[in-house]
Length: 275
Ligand SMILES: [Zn+2]
Ligand SMILES: [Zn+2]
Image 1 (tube, rainbow, N blue to C red):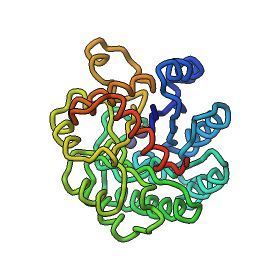
Image 2 (tube, rainbow, N blue to C red; image 1 turned 90 degrees about the horizontal axis):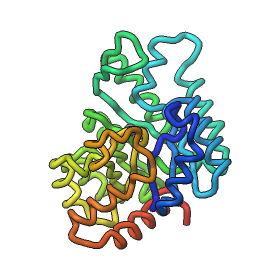
Image 3 (cartoon, rainbow, N blue to C red; image 1 turned 180 degrees about the horizontal axis):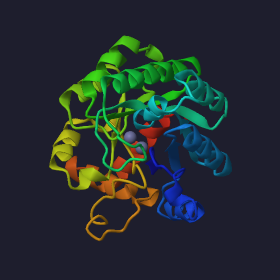
Image 4 (cartoon, helix red, strand yellow; image 1 turned 30 degrees about the horizontal axis):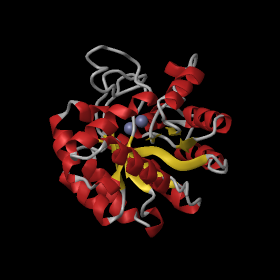
């Protein structure tokens, strides 16, 4: 299996990342992509990818963390993007990500007085544009995050679209909206499915409409714990649990687990240009 989105670079896994990777291997999760969310976690993603075969890194500034630029004078959009650009020279950095747009007002955040202002959205757009340019310039894939901001994201993608991104971009943890699916179909993008598909009826109906050749599976570890682990409160989520996502897809599409595993693994390799 291929967990195309897991944050093994986060503090949560600092003490036991080796064990978490062993458990994933035991369950047949042999490929993983670790996306960065800022400069520090992007660096850590590359460190881990360099250390383990089958593990790859994505580097990027997440729209939530673009908030730093509003609060700090010692960094600029240019300095942040240039740090990401440096990291793209690493051979195991296969993608720019996760980048995108996010209008969700987070309650649990490291940022004081967090609010989604017009200025903040403009900075998110600016960073996203610059990072899409990097993916194109360095021939890398693109992991797109969207939360409650599909109009902003789609408008910007329409303006910035480049044929290089065909088969090389994903709506990770895709919100269940027909417009996102339509855009993905028109532009040969992939749709990322997470553990919430095991209990969220809207996502289940949505995934039934997405052809298997467009789907990749992800855990977004340490977040989005799937059922039945959620009821048992078996936190944190980790890559070995991606099998619950594959099982639910098989159930929704009336097909075998084996065919979902085979196809989503192949899709993951195409998405990240892994041959
Ligand atoms: Zn995300
Ligand atoms: Zn993520």
